Length: 176
Image (cartoon, rainbow, N blue to C red; front, side):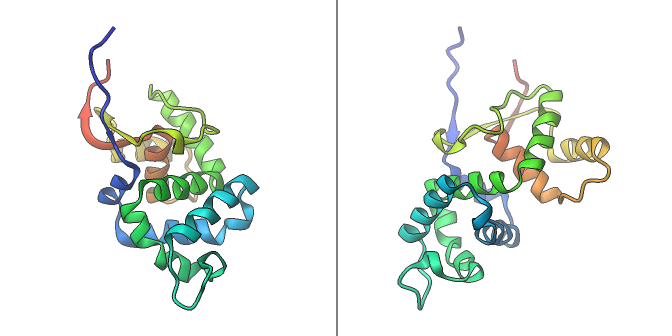
């Protein structure tokens, strides 16, 4: 039994690893794909939007156009770990094919991750350890090698790796 403790960063720490343009793209993707989400996640996302996003001219931010909503969501995404969790879990649900492909890739590379169906919002945050020799370049090359016809962007693949594994590449360490 190990005395080692697992350290976590709250979910909004992901902002240190995302460029602003991509963050806005993810938010727009989630809000524009709202109707495709399971009803349970529509309710969760709507509740978060109503509580945390202000869109000028709208009493209920949930009914604002997705582009305005996305711009209004930047601040909560930067500061609120619960909001980030709901947004990223919703994003995963909208990209289930990519999630399955990335899960298969990471499993094959020896990563220990939860099933795609797991609700990662229940976790305390991102683990701070990233497997050594598995930087984004290596993982992306492996992904494209196994999936040469994929139309997924490197940003989407990287985000899926981070969210599926609930790890941020903060401390690169050999796994035991």
